[in-house]
Image (cartoon, rainbow, N blue to C red; front, side, top):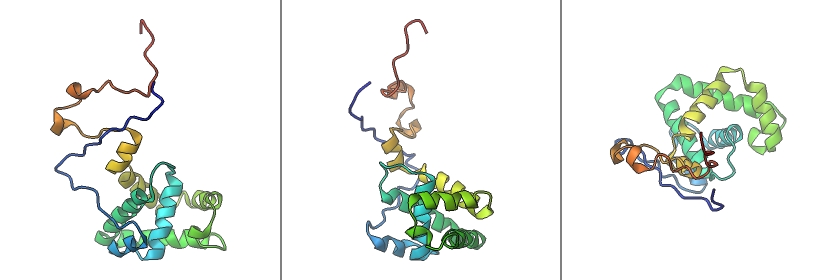
Length: 169
C-alpha cells in the first residue's frame, strides 16, 4: 500500500453530456431555472450534510443542486416538494437551516427522515452527487471503460488501497 494518493482519471461514457461548468462564486444561482438563491443554498447544505465528504469542493454539491433544479424545472410537482423540504428545514429551528451548525442541521434532517420531501431530496442527491466525474476521481473510481476497451486490459486488478491477498488464498 502506498502513502501518497494515486490520481486516477475518471472516464464517463462520451455519449453522455459533460459536467455542467458553474461559476465558482454566488452567481452560480443565476444558472438555476426554478430555485432561488435561498432555496439553492439550503439544498447545497442539506446535500453536504447528508453526504459529507471533506475532500469534495462545494462545486460538486452545487452541481448536484443544479441537476435537482433541472429536475424540478421539468416537473412542477417535484418543485413543490423540494420547496416543502426547504420550508420544513428552515422552519424546524429558530434559525434558518443555512445558519445552523452541522449538528443542528443533522438533527433537523433526522426529524424530516420519513417525509416524502426528505426522501425526494435524499434520493435525488445520491443519484446526482455520485454520478459526478469529479467525485469519481476523488474516490479513485475510473468510471466507464467500454469505450476504452473494457476493464480486462486496463488494470481491473490495480487497486493499490487494498491489503495484499495472503498466500494460498
